[in-house]
Length: 224
Image 1: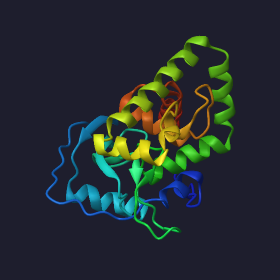
Image 2: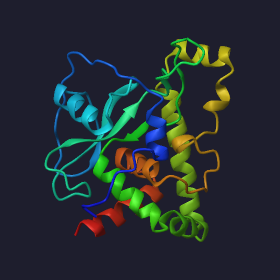
Image 3: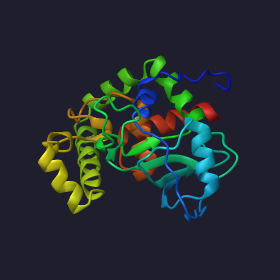
């Protein structure tokens, strides 16, 4: 697993091209845990350097660190570095075909920023874990219910990050469909398993995504 090559042009990284660099001033982080856990805290200069190193840029819509990971966890990391980012649901595009700099709807609010984790999750997808988890989900009504609740919670969180002015703008632009009945990573079919990266990011940030929990379990087994 250590020799896995990163897939820079993966679907996850393609989404990353939508956002541009941002400077964050005067923000200090607090390291709390020796494992990957939900951690909505502010961002230190060291965090920004690490994020830029991992992604090759700093997301323009970065809000907080949603989860951190350390040694002996699935990342194999050596300190409490950012693992999942909380992103604003509106983001400026890196390349503007219409020559504007207006923020557009962005489907992913929990973003996996650890390259090692991304590579390991890509390997799980390669060996058929998406199909395996889809079957597991289909065969259990309780899992389907939990997954729907996870998507609804995600939808509510996206709405909650918007100001009144942004809500008015979304209505005026006719963008409400990009937010209504839209769950993790932009999914509308709540019983569908798609990108394991986005399920894992949601799980690490909130502990409320059963598919993400299965991904995490697989990573921990591989790390032994």
